[in-house]
Image (cartoon, rainbow, N blue to C red; front, side, top):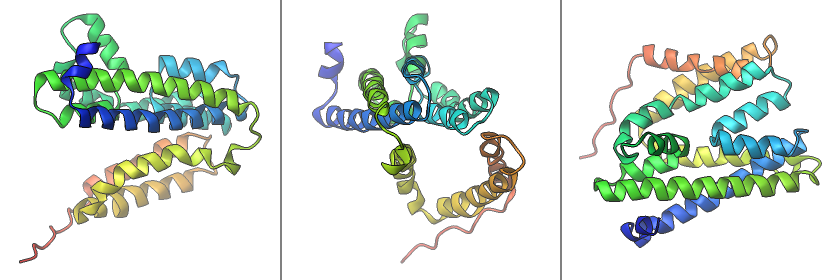
Length: 236
């Protein structure tokens, strides 16, 4: 473990520490929302240890707390975690050759850990960045969930504190830099998001909680079938 920290430069370690701090705060929000919503304290704690997927956990708990069926909660989590499959192909070289290291690495795989791996071309630094970020996030997320779950017992209404907006805010902060390009902005906002949101809103009165969110993915199909926007003009 000590060799991981020695392999990484100070800037990378600082970035990993900041990501872990932010993750702990989001984990605390998740724990507080789950417990204050009526779930037993052990549910978010065990879920975080066994699932360890922030977006999927928020989606599943949101579906359950809004009265949705368990199958809808599981489906929402699986859809969100489907992105990890191509991630595994992209960073498979950093997980090692032993079955148990690959299994542990698959459990620790997150968007942040993958991002740290992909920004470096050196095999040793890629390996160190993945495990340092993965283990750090696992520890900080679960610590945050426990603290948030304990605090959630005394919180009557998490909506009053805005805790339910914590995770969407983090996701929005990650997406905003990509929207600087006009082509990405047009595809994401005008096609996929708008059409997907329209489908979800239309289905909400007729379907159980959780299913309209899944149907919103049809917006991606509409986006792929639409003609591509013209490229940005270069400024001479």
